[in-house]
Length: 273
Length: 275
Image (cartoon, rainbow over all chains, first blue to last red):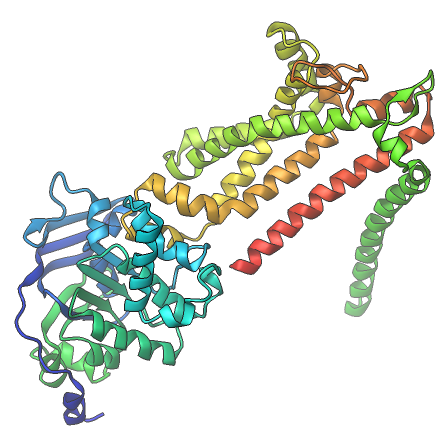
């Protein structure tokens, strides 16, 4: 694709929204291994931000800092601050369990629970105390509709979630996250384990959802980043064993057509990675 | 030696070993089947033994066996599962956990007659439960506990990480994750462990002979004594009272254990299909 054709491909730039997540001087360690260094980034509210970079560049690690999923790995440590709506998410008195309700997550491997489709979507609301059948029914239907899955599953709600196709499973996982009404949805390579038709559906879905929630997607697929995102961040680990850093961050159109950093340009033009 | 020749010899040994296993198994089953099948009447299964040579049926012993096994299962399952959840999910993986795991594995291989003796000393004598379903169930529980605990622990560990992540990602606490996703996902394999332990308990003789008594009762309360099928079989055969009835009892026992094992296999296979 030529640069010009690529540029045509981009969506209209979004209006300037406020900053949803602000990261300042973030360093991250797995035990002794210094994985990320000096990350500064402002994620805008509503809209899609893409994290790109070669494998092992720390983009997924950084993503998991944003809902404190890394807390589950023993021996990890975070320096610096991350604020969500101005509140430090690593501050004292912040319960990661409450945080993860506000910052939902979609994983590379679709991971429906081994239970019915209905129970998968109702799982989150039930966790947070919704008990009435009518209310649950409504949440389940609305969430599945927003995930563009309702029509396909409305007659098979009591089938096991694992009986769906890979792409459907991923949309089920999205519905499951939407059911707890998060402000932010983190997507860690959500399309790398599913077929191309389903990828299209999920990308369309992101375009619909971004008016309501802030989406951050990690992808190794640059065309995908170009198609779906408003802003793009490029991460790079220069040498094995060194901490990865954020090389460049900006409007997706600018990153892909006129990158400021030589390394970004090399990556985007396919010279490495 | 010629490569092809050594290959043929190895194959020959493997084949003989395999066939030996099958033949031994088949011999046992066929022998018991041939000798016991004639006894399989409703009268044999449902009525009481009577007369000096224990003619008639073995009904009360079946009831005793089922009673004590069910009671043991009820006692063991919650303890074993909670212990396994603690070991697999909560305990800091270190020396203490290794010791507990080693203790469980050792407990599983303690000769059952030792367990019976211990049950006699502790439950029958010291705690005063006397020869009873309760004493026998508790002693059997010692036997089943490590089996259920270890299979449950393995089942919990086998639940894929990303299922847990999904749950944490929705804002579930650790206990919510364990109780609402991990345990349900592990349930088929946990059930398999319980069923296998149950099969073991049904066939157990040494433990119950010391703790349940020998009276031919239909037990009603947990404090009643009784005679399980295995002990009945032992007495009939050892004292040469009634060999046909002994074979009949053996056949029924084997059928029950086969049933448990087949159920376990079926559950496992069904859970694999879902994955």
